[in-house]
Length: 145
Image 1 (cartoon, one colour):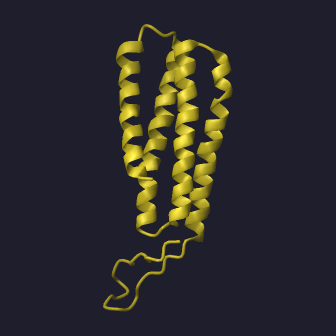
Image 2 (cartoon, rainbow, N blue to C red; image 1 turned 60 degrees about the horizontal axis):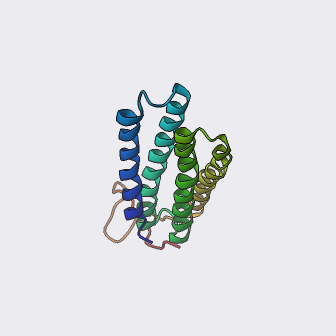
């Protein structure tokens, strides 16, 4: 899957939902619902930025492609479930939708745990020979798992 494209779509939606809330929902929703909407936009946007960054980490070998794929899947699921349920809750006031939110939060937490674990397991060996000296920037290993 092209996660960079998916991230770009999520980021576009995040900006759009933020603008929608600020310009069209302001004054139409009560303060509680507006706070829920803003929280949804914030988590949506932060995790979409993470979704944008994770493929780059895999490309430079800081995490394995498999770990990046799982992290991206979990972030995408988290955005849909967490932010999506909060958007729906803010618009409808249907509190039952709030029951979905923790599943999205769990997906977010799992995504970051997978990424942390993968980054700890990655084997990045700086190049100290082959024309470089110890003052040079380390070269990231291309041995991504």
